[in-house]
Length: 288
Image 1 (cartoon, rainbow, N blue to C red):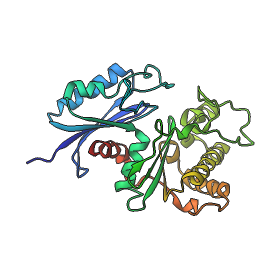
Image 2 (spheres, helix red, strand yellow):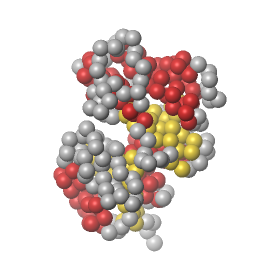
Image 3 (tube, one colour):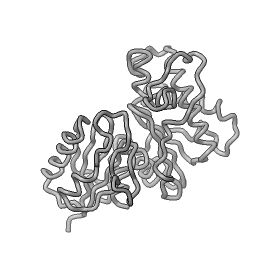
Image 4 (cartoon, rainbow, N blue to C red):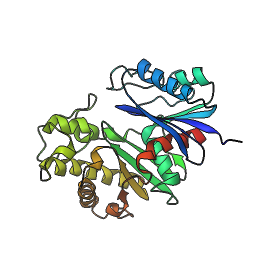
């Protein structure tokens, strides 16, 4: 008998990554489609999954947020107020429930990644993982003892308020809600708004790299004090910039001041699951 197959969706602000996998994490098919409007993007995703000829056991969706994750809410599975045009109020689960009639699990992309890294990746057997992604937006998820942190809704770690770097006082920030929160200061669009290109395109000695590392390092020191994770995993396009991880480690160590139990610079690293972290996050959600 063929192993059960799961439909996987890593829903990002610029692209959706689709996949088909089994419970042993074997990925049989994969596709990328651009994130445009909900009707166009979700419609294309549904048609791709239908074309695979698979009887799905369930779907897992690890998505950009914010999301309504209250099962009792009539808007469960919908995107809440977001700066992403057209997506506020869009249901991510309804098209798949209607077309395939199987369970659909949903959580944020960072919660999915935190769970998969805790189960199978950089945090396996360590007990707790903080996952932070820094790209088009900034978000974080925390997994401890196999359970994801959640209150009235999911964490929104990208929107903590930040001190200002002394060389960056005049930049208002790009967040439409808070201006100069962490996301408004350190996400990819905030980098481009200041310096006209991505962080990886800046010259090696450009001060922008030091400034962004300063913000991220201080945010990590804050999260470390609050959560004391055994591992801190950094994903997203911004943190893939060559040399940035070492700058972040140094800034986090300086900001932490040796206060917490874990030596913070030794806890920070890249995803253990590499490019599969997002899809396997969706799988981890589906298997639950």
